[in-house]
Image (spheres, rainbow, N blue to C red):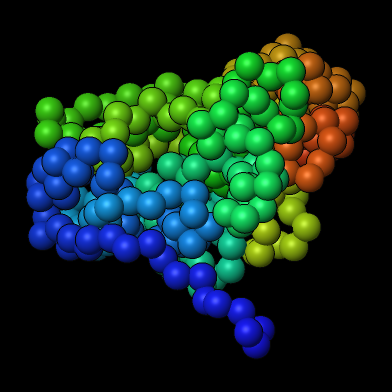
Length: 336
């Protein structure tokens, strides 16, 4: 618009890492003032909004060790953290054997966004809130919250922690499949379950150390029927109101395991344990699906955020569970 000043990025130093070792060393040396830059689809927006102002950006796009999608001898999958979401969504092995991952990756933004966004970046997305994800002037007109060095939550006034929403689309699908993370720092490499990566705290929402880099996601061999779905105002443009991923093993009459994970409803992806237990005990049939969908409401805690009341979120998740389980019921075991 005429007369408006352009929103500029704050000043920063850019360091293009030559390899993964240099990136790890630079991240450790930079301390709290350093951040990684791969796709930049979320980070650069946060910088323009004044939410973060890193002194140093470390470019890691295309680094060896962060790229590639590889299958192991047992059918397991290694996905480099630097893999673009477009490549993940269209990879033939992922489409054939891990369809929920492909569906989740394809649900992120537009194709232009997916051509830049990476798997690691999506897993590390900062939590979002209708209060903090606004302009700096808008935030300055209100009292500071947990995310802005205050001591209150504008969304849930009685909450002792930040209730900002985790909006990673890919995380629920990977959690449903029991994925693990490979992480590297100057101290070496380690692996950990993705389930141990997230915290139910909108400020400190991951257990990743400040100087650690996610290098890959490790997915066990495909044994389950899997489905992912997302509800959003505009497909391909908006963050989801809610997402749901499910992985089920066994037949419809004799379900061996069922893992359902809801996203965009809390500060971490929520495992719907009660709903999954209903499916294991009663199978995949219309009555059991209805009971599991109702049980999912009890798995959710305080979920008021991102322009929707808690009652809506709980009704939404109930509907997503019913939708996904019905889809799984119609997939013959061994055909996903």
